[in-house]
Image (cartoon, rainbow, N blue to C red; front, side):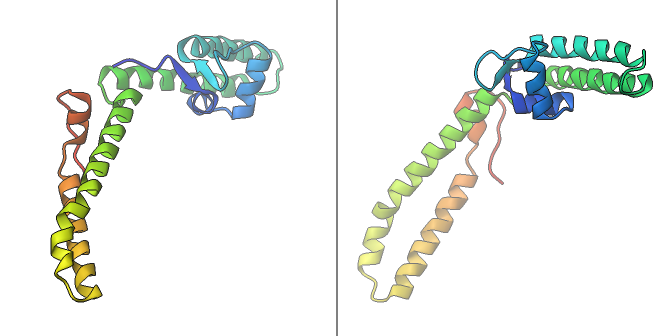
Amino acid sequence: MTIPKEITTAEFSRLVGRTIRTVQLLIEDGTLTRSRHGKMELISNLKAYMAHAERVVMTEGRGGPATLSASRSRLTRFKADAASIDLREQNNSLVRRDEVNKAREFLLQLIREHLARLPEKLAARIVSTTSIVEVQEIIGEEIRATLIELVSQPIVARATGNGAQMSGE
């Protein structure tokens, strides 16, 4: 599994512990770059942000706006966060966006198929009923049975074709 090449400005701001506006200002002054509207290349911008953070630490040590120890502490936290991302990638604990999208699309298709079969399944049973209450009970039973069938499906494995399985629980 790989780290995404691009992330949104909001995701980048959360990653580095800054506000979206601060990240936008860094883009405006050329410290960071935007590859397309709202997207940023992750690796090059992380490197650029680390270089910027180190420059800030050095500047603050010469009477800048914050203390040197506070800046070093922020830089250490940032480096730890970057290492954490690398570790999660190595341990395969990050879920690829394309796998999530495939699983979502598969699940939606499965729901559509099950819903489309309901009229066929219910028609014969409902036509012989004489009360609305009985119709409601039949429809309710079939919906519950369909939901139970849906949550027992191994979604991710069938959607992505890999060995990992995730079933609704």
